[in-house]
Length: 383
Ligand code: FES
Ligand SMILES: [Fe+2]
Image (cartoon, rainbow, N blue to C red; front, side, top):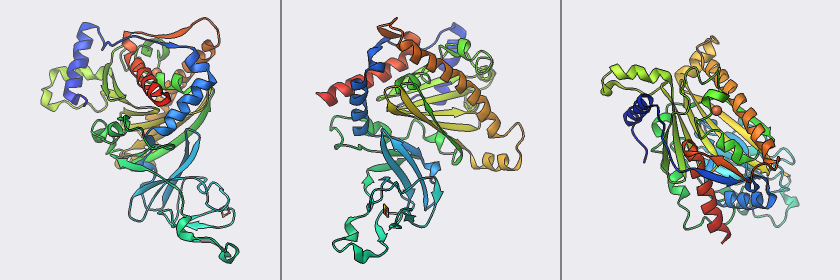
């Protein structure tokens, strides 16, 4: 599905020697596709009908833990049951529809804040205050409305939110097998922070900013460029998804060591784009999951979940010194500020009338793959 770590090191070292990078097909994306509200409406309809990654398992490690997030405009929440199964529900009470889960937390039952209807962790309705006021109410019929979901190697993946999944859509199989990310995500069991920000940027512009290393030198001159390479990536695809490898300069130390002793931790950042809108990124001592949730044609919410190994989480709690994961997070955050500045500039430029299309070169091929995957599904969906 994707190459082994040692193969990636070999390919990176060969690129360093030759001054090259992985190349693919170029792409031209019409500017109209970022600005047109009816295109956006069509995309949202498609996204709601497709499987996608909801939250990392680390957001709800224990029975009773729950977390909410709107997905493509649909309010949802996940809760871990006493049977340790994660379930995803539409976030609305079955009385008058109040948003049941308002925040992250842990509880034995889910109690609606409005009138106190109470649900078990499996979604069934357990208690209605003054139930004699609802003569026709069949409690067994009024549990929370569940959304199909499964937990795949520490990611909670949801199925279609609208009509049943397209028979021809192979996305679920590609999100249903965690082989590409399993060994990277499994150790990062502890969620250390969540950040949620709304940005005045189209969701696809935000996705694009993760998918190429052609901008490292000019955008990240004082942050990533000193430790990484400019325009040097390995680009892989699995189904509609991609993995882009961003090597660190310390990877060259592996040259003098036998291949059997090669470890890739802290020598590359792997960026997994899990189609359509979730990125998973490995950093030394830190794993990030970033969700780009489209709000309207020019607004998106960006939710970041940061996860670490349990021993590092404990060390960080004891010692807030420079070596704890928060330090790594603030370094990455400085890079992210630079990326967002660029995306904001691109969003403004879309309105200039200068370009009919946005140009992506042979070194930005993962972006072309993203747009091609989206176009192909839109065509099939609207046909
Ligand atoms: S809306 Fe939830 S109990 Fe009334
Ligand atoms: Fe960047």
